[in-house]
Structure formats: structure tokens, C-alpha cells
Amino acid sequence: MKRIRLSKHARGYIQRRGFTVAEVEQAIRESRWNPAELNRLQCRKNFPFNGEWNGKHYATKQVRPVFAEHADEIVVITVYTYYL
Image (cartoon, rainbow, N blue to C red; front, side, top):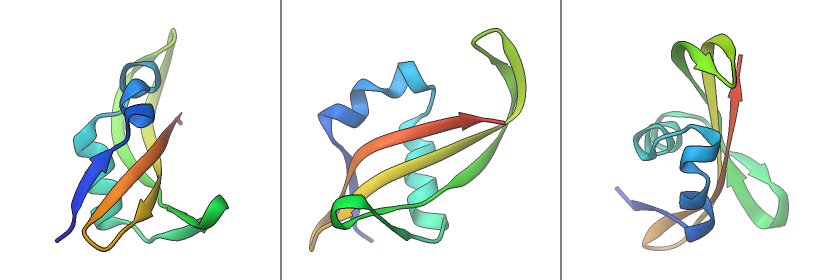
């Protein structure tokens, strides 16, 4: 199993976008990968949220990492989070 490493850019968005490293790793390991721009990959995974984000209540949080697969590791470039 390849190591998953978040880039400095991706780590910088953890608080602002409200995802965790564990959620990103789980999304990559358990979800189907799809092509993304610039020869990168992406996937999506929904997580139960049932909480408040920016003053609104949401039941679900969707985490969408964009990443590059290398021979020895997966590097997460950025992570988008959607509240549904």
C-alpha cells in the first residue's frame, strides 16, 4: 500500500475547508479514481457530517482530493470539500 502525503498547499486548507487527513486517506483508498486536469487523479467520498458549517446545518460532507500517483507514494495536491 502506497504512502499518502499531503502537499504543503493541501495541508494549508485543512482548517479552511474542514477536512481531515484521515478523510482524505479514506477517500483515496476506498473510492473510484477518475482523471483530473494536468494528468492528475481525483476521487470523491461522502462522510456523515450532521453539523454546522459557516452558519448552516449540513447532513453530509463530501471530500474530493486531487492527487498524483507516483511509483512510491500518492501526493495530494489539493482537497475540495462540499457540504450537502
